[in-house]
Each structure stands twice: as structure tokens, then as C-alpha cells.
Image 1 (cartoon, rainbow, N blue to C red):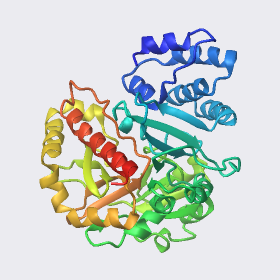
Image 2 (image 1 turned 180 degrees about the vertical axis):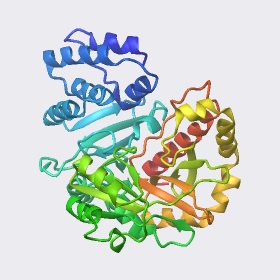
Image 3 (image 1 turned 180 degrees about the horizontal axis):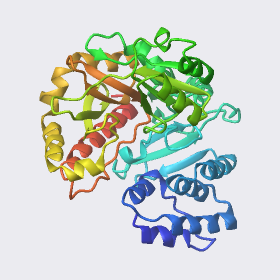
Amino acid sequence: MDIVDVGSAANAEHSIAYRPLGLAVLLREATAGKDLTPLGERLLERAKRDNDPDVLMDLSLVLQFKYQKESALAVQALAIQRCRHYRVKSAQSASPLRVLALKAPGDLMTNTPFEPLLASAGPDVQVDVLYVDAHSTDIASLPEHDVVLVAACASDANAPVLARIEPLLGGTARRVLNRPEGIAQTSRESAYALLGKVPGICMAHTVRLPRERLLDAASGAWDLSEAVDGHYPFIVRPVGSHAGQGLVKVSDRHELAQYVESANVEEYYVAPFIDYSGADGLFRKYRIVLIEGKPFVCHMGISSHWMVHYPYPEMIAHPERRDEEASLMVSFDSTFAVRHRDALASIAALTGLDYVGFDCAESPDGRLLVFEIATAMVIHDMDDVINFPYKLPQMRRVFGAFQDMVKRAAIGA
């Protein structure tokens, strides 16, 4: 939906039913650099008039894209108080294929962002969302469905949600994609326990430590290497952080002290730094998803800095890096996927997940260096087609594979 249509929908008369926009539409608008402030103002005015939970949900998303997290979650909570069940994609068929996603309340990193993956699924696919929390005892049974996707991801906040979802799944005879017990194994510490010693896989030993313990290490009262299998430099990040927020490399205990004293966080993940730079001094980080065990590359970021978060400025400034990424997407199945066939198969088998993503690189000794594994990684087709013309065909392959998986699961194939 174009932003003009968005505005007209939000300005519709009170008597006209509101057509929700949802994550896929609003993410595309935000990624394109559109100013969502006018839309947010119109949604707020409509919400004041009729308290429509669909309006509140869209307003919550706009606020998140405007980096107003606290307000966004407050608005989302109001919506969920009014309604737990939302239709995020309607079907034109009289007998649609019905997908039910079970989400947890929270921000954009709380759940699998499946909406862009299913946005192009066709007119015969209907997608509903049911919000579940630890206190949702009012849910006696699941809405009608042909397949269930557990979208709540692994986090401290979601642990009781996943525990609440488990008995709800006992009431369905339909296929469940991404069962809670598999999702729980993708937390940073659990992922290392699961995959860290697997042949062909390299993972930094990640431990979770309280602030007081890091201050002890920074003061010299305790040796950090006693808990973490390695020595300085270490990678440190706050528990619960994503997208590099608060992520630093500390080279000695003095840098550690400066970081912890300024961060004011109660718990941290700590891991030894693994230098994965290539012969040219550049760092290459890949985002890969496994769909029913088959790997698909979604992007390769190439950066002069060790912390690679798909560096758009660098990729745009260096056409040779885009050429390398384009070449990888063409050759991935016969090169990267072959080199790491056993490691990729191990990830699929050990997690037991139907759909999972991970960020990785290649270690100096040729192993698959896994940084993070999660079901909540954003996969989309919204990159600038002028600079990244090769990405759209690849993402259509990913979307098609995801949709095929869902359809097969729905019909029991």
C-alpha cells in the first residue's frame, strides 16, 4: 500500500472499517526512508475516536520505527488488552489456507518477522496472529488453522511465553513449525552448548556474567579467562541487546572497566574475540537462513570493521564488494553451501527448527564461524534495487521456499 493510501485509510470516517497495514507494509515504508510521523498522527487521532485494536497495533509499529519503544509497547499492550487475535493477511478464497502465528508481546526483535516472508503468498493464504503471554489464561483453544508457526523467539522475557505456548499446542492436530523447545536452544549461551563443539563449526565460548563479576575482572580481583575460554580481547554486550547495540571489543581490563562503568547494565554476555578478517584485511559476514534444512544466503556484508551490520555505506561506496556479494548469491549452492555442508546439516538437525537464521563468517582454519543463531532475524526484499539489483531475485527464492514450506505443512505433505 502506498503511503498516500495509508493516509486515506487512517483518515477514513469512523463508520468505515479500518484496514490494518501491518509489519510488511510499514517496514517497507520505513526502509524506504518515508517519514511516518504524519501517519502516526492520523493513527493516533483515529485511535482516540474508536479504540480499534488494529489501529493501535499499526500505531505501535509506527512508534517502534520512530524509535519510541516505551510508547510503542504501551500502545501495543492496550491493543492486546482489547484483542489477542489479529488477521494480518486476508484471503480472497472461500476456503483459504489458514496460517496461525503465535506471537509474544514486545518489540520487533521479540518474534519471527514472518510477515515480509508471507506478504506475497497469494490470494488463497490467510494469516492470523494470536498474542500469548505468561498470563494469557483466557485462551482456551487456538483459533481455526491449518498450520501453526511459533513466532515467539528465545529471550528471558519470552521464556514463560514459550512455556505457556507448549500446552496450547497440545490442542492441535495440525503441523507446528518451530516448536518451543527448539526455539529455546537459540539463546546465546544455549547455542554455544548445542553447537560449540560440533565438527566444522567454530563458535566463541559465550558466558553470561553479572555486572559485579565484570567489575571484579576489571579491577584485577578476578581473571576473566577463568569463566571464558580465551584471553583479551573480549567481546562484551548487554544481555537482551540486538543489532550491535552496546557491543564492544575490549583489549584489556582498563577498557573493560571503562565500558562497564559507562554502560550501567546488570548482566552481560562475554566471549573471546575471533579475528575473521580475510587476506585483504576485510571482514565478511553472512546472513543465512535454513528452511527445512536447506540453506539460503540473504546477504553478505563486507567491511573494514570487525562489527559488520550489513554496511550499506561501505557496500555502496565499493562496487567491487557488491559484485562479490552478487557472485556469492549466484554460486552459493555450489561453493559456500558445499564447503560447509556438514556444519549446516548439523545446525538443522540439532536445533530441530523448520526455520532459523544465523549470522556467520569463515574462520581462519576454514570452519563455519557462527556468531548468533535466532528465529527473529529480519529477512526482507527492500534493499535499493539500483545499488543491489541482484538481491531481489535471491530474496524471492527465500520467500518462495518459506511459503512452500508453510503450504506443505498445512496440507500435511
